[in-house]
Image 1 (cartoon, one colour):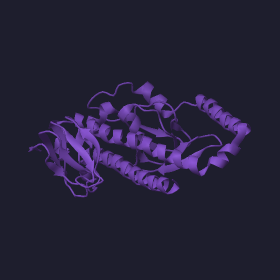
Image 2 (spheres, one colour; image 1 turned 90 degrees about the vertical axis):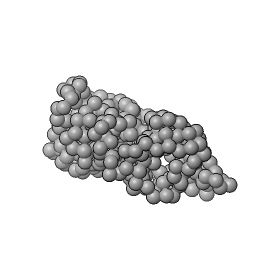
Image 3 (cartoon, one colour; image 1 turned 180 degrees about the vertical axis):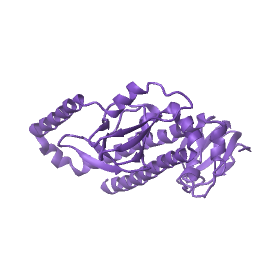
Image 4 (tube, one colour; image 1 turned 30 degrees about the horizontal axis):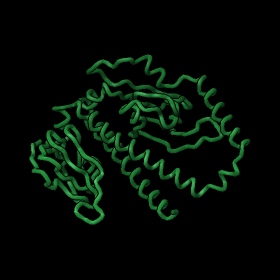
Length: 298
């Protein structure tokens, strides 16, 4: 890792460039721009000390998605792809810090994506929505109420984990649990604090699980991860996770034992970061597509 200095108004890198390094700001402020220097230039945000920029080029092998400009004299740490594990080894608390920054981008972009899709639904379904009527809405509310009552009876794996592992001792191996088919790992709408790595078997991810509104989003297999947003910011679960095979084996990861995981298996931490990167990349593609549809609908 090297420290670098950029004078005010200097361009650190440009949108569309390829890169094998990213940066953490030590002093100063950087501006994030689209179409910098062009007639349609747009400033997205400012980056301040402690924040990272350019990490997706290293973690996810993306071209640079924006231009970074020093808004003040800027002092940064440059982190290379080859030096990433060394950086984490020297400062293991930076693993969670980087995850939180990527997770924050996912959270913000999800809100913007939901706003666009709500607009599309309103424009495309105005007539149908008006026809829905009182009885149809009442049926929907009954389904949600019935789902809540059904889920209230069953203990989730996360309930068990919270009781068994209130605090994972440092330098201990991460807890691993085996689930029977049908075991609910966590429920949509509940708060959470763990993420999970699938080490065997399969996990289904659902919205509206157990109701007429049930929708299966995906099935996850070995070397997949899920639940990371609740680890990052203790957000409520956006879906229900269910074991789909007997003997489904899950590694339970908390913010507190991320450093232990890195010491034992740095490759797995790299995989988690790439998982977050891929999630952000897919969301970005979906968001741009929805924006294009919204422009056409207007």
